[in-house]
Amino acid sequence: MAPPPKHHWIIGDVHGCHEALVRLLSVLPRNDHLVFCGDVINRGPAIADCMNLVWELVCEGRATWLRGNHEQALILGLESSPAIGHPELLTMDTYRQLGDGLSHQWLHRLKQLPDVFQGDGWIATHAGFDDSGRPDLNIREPFWEHYNGRYGKVVVGHTPRPTVEFQGQIVMIDTGAVYGGLLTAYCPETESVVQVHGPRAVSVSPAHQQELATGLPC
Image 1 (cartoon, rainbow, N blue to C red):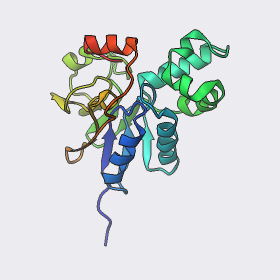
Image 2 (image 1 turned 60 degrees about the horizontal axis):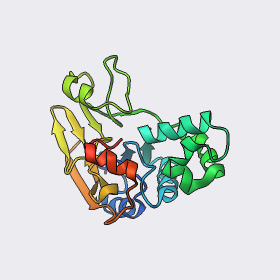
Image 3 (image 1 turned 90 degrees about the horizontal axis):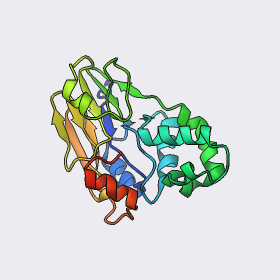
């Protein structure tokens, strides 16, 4: 008897919420493929645990980890700031939690992360595409307002929303787990949504408070 077709579950911004991630993975079908939509790192209390778990799934062939703007910022910071304790790096939660040596050990892995994952009639990326069709890890309104459907359904994270939000053919699945919201997994084949609660209380820095006040964390 032929096995059932494998589905995909695209997971929104984890941001170091390891306990929520473990709970989410425990209720997702084990044989389906997971696509982490970027920003596995930064902000949350257990960044190293999240990185290790997601990378293990990648190595087992069970998952794809896409590059988000936070992974990209860490890559650029490590490549351009050779001195230990460089001020730019010290602003990054991931660097502070991992330390200099472990952060640099991760650099080679992070540079391997792809920008997109292509499915049948859909594509996942962290934030969207620019006018030339290139993945843009920071884009928001210009993509939301002008996407012409060239890639079919596009599933993105990056911008926290209270619930999964559909804007035409764009599906926004970052539901703010690290801010006490939900960690979301979305199946593009069935449009099913599975969610678990994020941490009840996460320490928010003044910089993060400013981002929340503007409604556009990045």
